[in-house]
Image 1 (cartoon, rainbow, N blue to C red):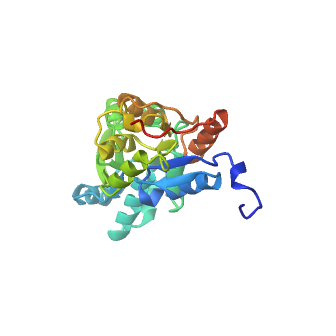
Image 2 (tube, helix red, strand yellow; image 1 turned 90 degrees about the vertical axis):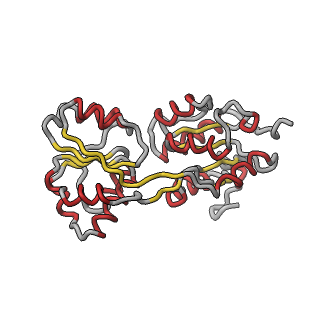
Length: 279
């Protein structure tokens, strides 16, 4: 029983084994939320966040911050990279006050506001396309700075430049394949007693790295038979389908809380038993 006297079996995710694939430093909210609902959680990061190999372009953009009209941050990783580097260079946060700051996602917005910086725009849907729809008639002739991962979709730079923005893209961090996850992931998928019911995906990178860690090219593998896939949103879902992986769960609100709620709804809709790996 838990501290409230509730039996673990009465929780909606009791008996479910779920893989959380977020980077280690970001896994806590999702993992803890799932555990609180009764799930057995495997934290196996499919991505690792690292600083850029060179800070040259990043530092140059920071020294010219006051010359920009807009700053776009697409993730909490980008927010962390921004304020860490500003602190290293002794650049005060107040210089951001004259910029219009745009954030994709409520978590990104909260991370910025915790630094005492006001966020001007958070698109209704937490995807790049929604931000473009909002900004496309506001950036003509404006200088825009986009902070993002080294590997990312080009939809924001492409579309905002078409809209007349003078846009600079800075690689604030990079995501790499965590080799230490390879053995653990393969191990649980091959063990009938540990085999997960569901794997969570929170970005397109987690999908691609999932297959890389397993050494397979698509989801059409006996190793993955019967394992459900939970996607945080449409871009991640598109990537799953691209690699012939099913999209079994996708929330209507593209947040960690929304993902947890959608997983619970799936668990309550049917009883899922993961069969042992076919011989």
